[in-house]
Amino acid sequence: MFIWIEDGKPIFFRQERVSRDSKRFILFKFRTMRWRSDEANEDIYTRKDDRRVTSVGRRLRKLRLDELPQLWNALKGDISLIGPRPEWSKCAERYEQTIPFYHFRHLVKPGITGWAQVNYPYGESDEDAVEKLKYDLYYIRHYSLKLDAMIVLKTVYTMFFGKGR
Image (cartoon, rainbow, N blue to C red; front, side, top):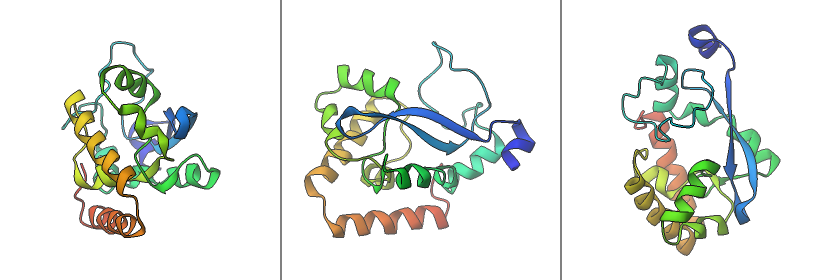
């Protein structure tokens, strides 16, 4: 409701993402940025203090509450609770061409939260995408109930103590 009051409709943000085996699906989030049509020349990264992010959106992002609608994606089976974050299809296509081993992220089902999300800040560059990939590949290689439990605990800590951005 606060999204609608500050910046009108739509309240939900929908975007095509890449899942396991490179399948495409529509991911849902609460909209945190000013409404606009996708512009071809627009920056693919959301930067710190990005002017496109609304004040309500900034609070939702800090507490990671903008991710809540993804529970619907998890219920539908598009994603799981834990795994590498599903990447925007536009970014995934670019990264697969420029980042070695990037395609290995698509060996597992993506998740709402993951090892990269709890250990590395929001990505703002191609270099950040490479660093996050290292965490994703670590998760894929060392997948375990213990690792998933650590991710859940770190995610809860991030949400309760506002360690997000």
